[in-house]
Length: 193
Image (cartoon, rainbow, N blue to C red; front, side, top):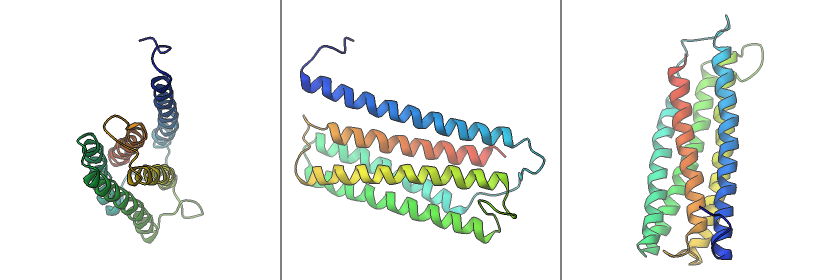
């Protein structure tokens, strides 16, 4: 494919999609580094291998998966010309994203109640990694929520049509990536003891 071909709009769209993928790849590299460090650190003598993840993390996983589905169906609704349904689904996605973050913090409080801390004399390296990985993911979900708010505003303004969906597509791609990333992280932390 010759990337120099096409209208200025097509070139602009390709450039924006490519920049998003560069960002996603850099995020993958960051989380790959943290999960690699987690694996290396699991060989330490002070590593705790009998810690259960908070139940709230698993409930939040279900919510972020559902939110990915609502985003997908919102995009499909725009393609089908059902703007009202698309807007409702985007607001639902936003609500599920906020609920995900709330549940993550409930999970943090469950860990604290169990006596596990991020730092300090009673902290443990494994729990520090869990806090770090989950919190950094939350920061990225906040970025996803901000992009989702921009998408909702543009949707309410009537910007998106079946022929003009770039912002919606970029937002959905980033959101689906965040979903996939969390599913990977929760499975990783659950199975890598």
